Amino acid sequence: MAPALSHRWRPWSGWSTRTRLLVITVAPVVAMCLAFVWYSYQSRQQEARAELAERGQVLARVLADSSEYAIVSGRYDDLRRTVRDVLQSDKAIWQVALFDGQRRPLLRLQGHAAGAPEGRYYEAPVVKRLIWITPQPAPGGPAPEGSRQGMTVETVGYLQVRMAPAALLAKQARRFHVELLVACAGLLLCAALAFRLSQGFDTSLQASLRALRDADAEKRQLLRRVNTAVEAERQSIALEIHDELNAVLVAARLESQRIAALARDVQPPALGEDIATRAQAIARLTLGLYSSGRALVRRLRPEVLDMLGLRGAVEEMVRQYEASHPDCRFACDASEDFDGIAPEVAITAYRVVQEALSNVVKHARARHARVHLARRNGMLHIDVEDDGSGFDPSASQGGIGVAGMRERVRALDGSFTVASDDRGTRIAIALPLQPAA
Image (tube, rainbow, N blue to C red; front, side):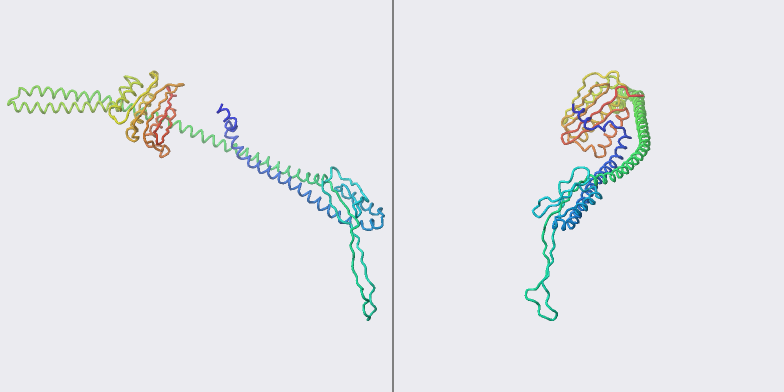
């Protein structure tokens, strides 16, 4: 369930490299274009409403100034004609209404605007201005007492203008459609350019990836050949040591023992005893060299691998580490025999386990170590665990030993993972039972 949900929330996981490149290139452009379109639309809306408000206020003031005489005289024919001319010339006016000082309707004319009106209206007072002047004094004479002049302003009515935004919004919509068309053309041009660029980049990237894969395959093949050559040379050296050097040492030991036996008849007896002592010393030296040669042969080519198979060889190795390092307990857990494994897989598994246990002894300071072998899904799984101090796997990839194990495993198209902390280290390896030729 979890992988399905994860894949559902990550639909791009199945996309090709070209599709991802195209999305990465086009997505910012589309986002910018959408932001520009939204901003342009909002700007056009605000511009239309601002223009409508300005026009309504100006119309209300102008018509209010023209309505003073009509209210005072009670004649509205001239005002009605003036307002109709204004309504005919401006299709954004929805209604013009005239009220007296007590806001009682006097005149109401409907415009030719389409659509619903705005919720607000624009109002201007209709004022009556009365200028009065008192009599002036005679020239050179004193001014009459109380003479003065001034102007009285009285609000006699109100003129309201209601506007309908449909006409202005339609005008702005036409401008917006032109801008949208230009933006879409630019977006299509960018998409075509991005498609072309992604095509070329994807071609170059795929060629680079193929070259890297080919180089990696050649590297793995070279490593397999090197490892095979090294193991073959080790086997050749081990055979030479076993068949020639050890045979010579056996012969030298036998000859020294024969000399010691013949020394009993040598006169004087002291000389014979001295010869026998030296012959026995030579026998002991040849026996030591023979033991060293056997150990060297086992290191160069583990005979136990050919005799007992992978499971027996690993168990014998674990027993040797257990005997030679009593401060750490070693254990081996193998679920089955591993017959039918390719020889290069068996020797690689043996060498990897050998290197892992060697690192446990040298660096881990562990109290317990365990080796687990299992066969699952056509793969040989090897786990080596310890409870030592651990190390940082990211530091230089864990050292030369870990790098060597990793390269051995990768040469056979296997997987190699290392997890380490202060509670210990776990090395997990998976090798194909029959690697590709």
